[in-house]
Image (cartoon, rainbow, N blue to C red; front, side):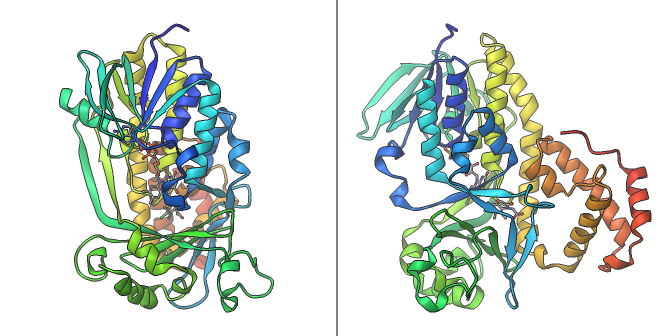
Length: 464
Ligand code: FAD
Ligand code: E0Q
């Protein structure tokens, strides 16, 4: 192939995987990344931050030939371990059995693995290079290095994988209105760390028979739902956990605004998350040093300027993290785009338009489901009506697997389009509601009649 090189901005999770996929298909790829090379610099102060990898992301990694490498360093999560204010934690399985699980992976580790793979495939990376402007008429970009020195480069085909605050998007929007809409959630997040249990005092170790390397059950995503806010924790391979507190940014207590220092935060945790607090060894230091992150959903009318520039991943469709699908969706994007470009390397305008046509309805659907899942996680996982629907759903999935699959499973364990999962979930919920009509007594439902009603009201699930 003798096409013009592709200029990619951003070597985060999506940029690095896209670079690998394009290089593998024979394209010349030049990648410019604002930050230093994490393989040299180490990842943000050595903090271990992790995220949930599910079937969609894994499928993209399989196609890239990278799944085995990634899985070697992943921790299985069978379900969510819900820690109520009072009483024992309980595991809500994500799938029907251990064939339906998700995986906790290190963000930094995954990013470095993807950079290695992309370089090995022939992509070229330029670190410490920040895009500051783009001229789409002259097809040139302006970059600045860490010292502030600027330079200009030609960029015939420009792809922005530079995340939620995309500079490429900003430049595109100044040239052609993209119809940008950013909806702030109004809640922020802060990451804290639970070190391996070996590093905690002896009396906090798991009871005899437990996993003594871990302060909590390792093969689960832990959730402490508290109504308007919550904590979660995902396991790391070394036996540590990364805890994330999600809380309103402003307003009456509790909000990040009302927790200005570690002392107030400690008092809040000792009231609301009493069992988590003693596990976070360096609580004061973590709380004081780690910034509060912001959360928004990004909607655009257009993702591209004809064949000259395109946005992908969070730069095109940042979503709130409550379904654990942002990276998974971005990884799905990379396969779709690389396949389309390989088929028609000289028709980037058609390819970009087709990419948006294919992916935007699905990005909108996962954006909506991620927002709904925040409410579900922080309020409903302890709600009897929610639990009754879940229980009845599980019975129907067992008795009528061709006609019922929980929306969570459609999103997390299949490759069916997100938009289909959203639509099917609505239809299934309506049916569950009509079967339960407000009751929480699953035992009272006539299951044979329920299965008949399911078969006559809903088409069979499509083959994946
Ligand atoms: P990013 O990862 O943000 O990468 C963008 C890259 O571009 C960065 O390296 C940045 O330095 C670079 N860059 C930025 N500006 C410039 C510039 N001007 N010039 C050059 N380079 C630039 N997703 C999941 O699938 N599962 C989860 O469990 C999950 N948990 C999450 C938890 C939280 C708290 C948050 C906030 C998100 C979570 N996500 C999760 C979403 C996931 O993090 C994102 O969807 C994913 O990182 C998007 O990848 P990206 O490459 O598009 O953007
Ligand atoms: C998952 C896996 C940040 C984050 C990531 C996640 C999930 C949640 C709650 C959060 C959703 C769920 N979930 O448990 O239903 O499945 O990734 Cl907060």
